[in-house]
Length: 329
Image (cartoon, rainbow, N blue to C red; front, side):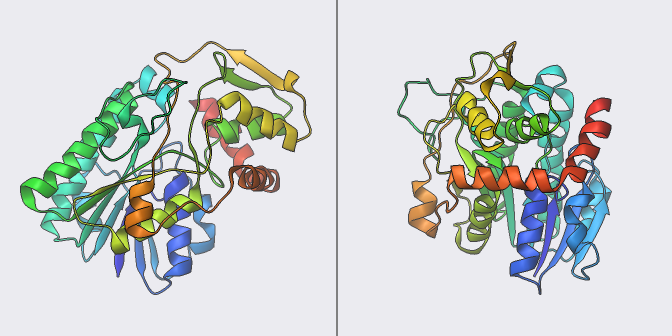
């Protein structure tokens, strides 16, 4: 089997490629990535010489590159996206271009090449926000209510993917996941930023009062879910994928990291809140559990410790990014 993985040099995409080639060494993977600031081929060092792995440096908005990359492909897994909410608030245009137009270019090529499955990776942010006191959880029937340019661009891409199934019969599946954490995450997101700032002797910036709640999903749990969706998921269906946390707010997450690193709360610096900051996300993953027998395996506290250890052991990986890419942004 041959897969086209878009955005495979990013955080989740690279973890997916490493997982797939380890578990299905006979399969071939083409990794199409533009290598924007968050794309990093260092993530894939261990497979770069694998004869079943091919890297293509290109943009999913470029129809010619996409068409040539998709020849002979059975499955497309679309990770490629601009994904940082803060950046979408400052400059929405790249998010619309990549997340909406880029997805449309991929869908057109998938139709032309008669791919057997087009799987689209999306986010729980398309559903909007919950009140802090709410016991509700997002599920596959939750109406879309995006509240940031990033979320709106992903919502638009989800609708496009569904429309290609309804209109053209393209065999698609979609997964909406919660906040991922784990190895190879670019150090602008909360968990790797907190870890690496402490390791550098800096303070951890926390937005507003820090009481924003997210559902944390270890990245390997996420790629296992994608694997099951590709194998057993029903064509045309959406699956929500969440983690094992229960109403842990950002301030608690940061305090857990400080405790692991034996630092006190004086290392926290409260900063001006993000515009339109969503209070709470929470995912109900009963559908994927019932239909595909998936559930998260990785306990948050245990794998937060493992994630901290990974960043301690891979200082060369993240220091280069923080000193080079983040300073230019």
